[in-house]
Image (tube, rainbow, N blue to C red):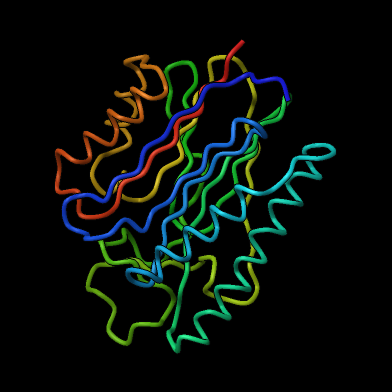
Length: 240
């Protein structure tokens, strides 16, 4: 593929969690970028997000973009099956992960997601969220919960309605955007939007930073706050 983009990313543990259950992937070679936010506790969350990144890190891009999307979906569905089996073997409710990913095409960009990790697009001075959180019941707290697995959910916490490793039938939502020079994309775990508003994210994009500098600024801003969760950001900038 002819490279028409620049990308950069960073993931950190934060100030409260002992372990980083987020994982990121930047595959400029095939035009694929991923952020995964694991859940299920240390080792389980690490395992889930790590397995997803490992599988997507190995996919090949053959044929057209639709063939590639099918390959990506097949890999994610297989991870879902494997996580369900692992949870049953370990005797735990859920070993899962959220997912947000971006796929490049010369004519359009495709953003896919499962859960509440987010995708944003910035173009012509305007930031817009292109994903919709799979969450019921309002804003999530810093404790990730899925469905009704908890008999007494954390007060005020929303609940994830979709995650990889949570249910046998898995559906990835997709949205198509333009693919124009100057467009920028942010993929992030919810550790970003727990600590800053969309207006604050927009302000960082307006500074016209290069991808790595922008990813670092967003992470550092989160670390200046409570940083209750792991924080991850991947920036993709389309070039002429």
